[in-house]
Length: 90
Image (cartoon, rainbow, N blue to C red; front, top):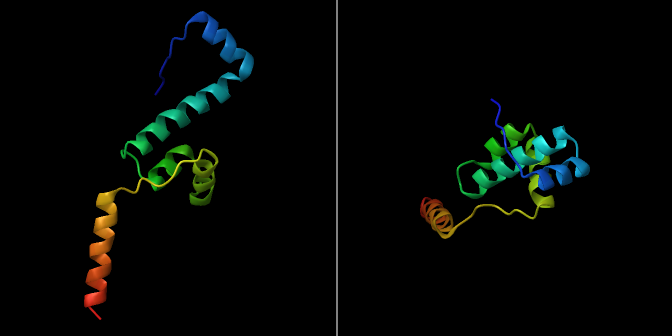
C-alpha cells in the first residue's frame, strides 16, 4: 500500500535537506506505528513485527525514544488479582 503525504513546499524542501526519501518513509512509518502502540492498538510484539525488529531490537528502539510500557491501573489490578489467586492456590 502506498500513502501520499502532501507537505507545504518549505517543509518539503527542509525535509529533503535533512534525510533521504527512504529515511523519511521509515520515520513516518515508525511515527504512525508508535502512535498506534501508545493508543493501545498494537502490542509490543506486533509493533516489533511490523517494524521488522526482533523483540530485543524493539525494546532498544522504544528505550531510545523513552517509551515505557503501556501499563495502567486496570492492568495492575488484574496482575494483583492473579497474584492473590496464585497465593491462595498454595
